[in-house]
Image 1 (cartoon, one colour):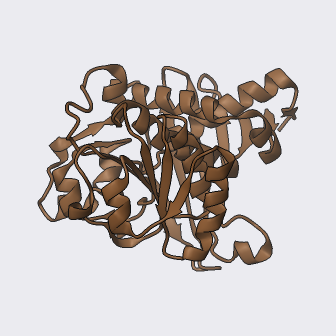
Image 2 (cartoon, one colour):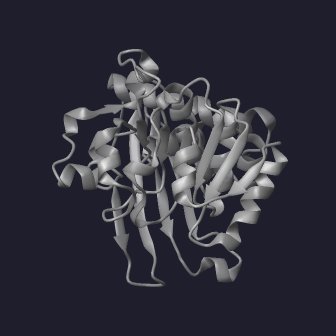
Length: 321
């Protein structure tokens, strides 16, 4: 089997690689060629940690495996990343362990790739202002990936803790975009694309604040009870997601569905747009909303890419189990 370290993943897997892998797996999911297995996520009763498994199988690429990991809130004080994960890939023909891949960096880059894919397929071509709701570790990945999808001229951002915004401003400066910290109402009024990446349990963006034609990528809601936008905003938008079953149970759409504002049938897998079986955006005034719940197949896709890239470069370590 091959071992691909965190450092090798950072060195070899770029945003373009992640975008290609995630876009392809979304397309395979929509065709029925790839599917996710039920997610396991538990509070373990130690260190305030959440731990679980995401797994699946992509028949088109013969990618089989799982991501194991979770969230340890005390890790930052120890100099570690709070989110910890490892990807296991298996040979689809024999069931043998094929690769062990560091999953922390890959989780960040695949999450950013998912929102970037949604922007590429759903945002207006003339989008000029990018809005960022959230300024944590993942926000930097999101900003870099989103900025490559349109000719943005400015970034406006808001965060619960304003003292974290200068770090995000530094990322914007790196990529040559003016940056301004604003209140949420102004962010909604100005932004053509909004990426929300928080751990909120209440609406941060309200329906009346968001202008017609906006594309929104909600990337933070991945657990029952979490929420980033107003259910009325969800009800007013054309809805897309990575996987419908997750979206209505642990994703952003759980609240609007529970309130009877949205029916499951109104939600479209983003892969259908990629495959050309759904038109996606149909007017300049339409609000489109992508709920990125984070599916195991995304992790497997980018991990598989990491293995191939590391084998070619000689960075992978081969061992006998």
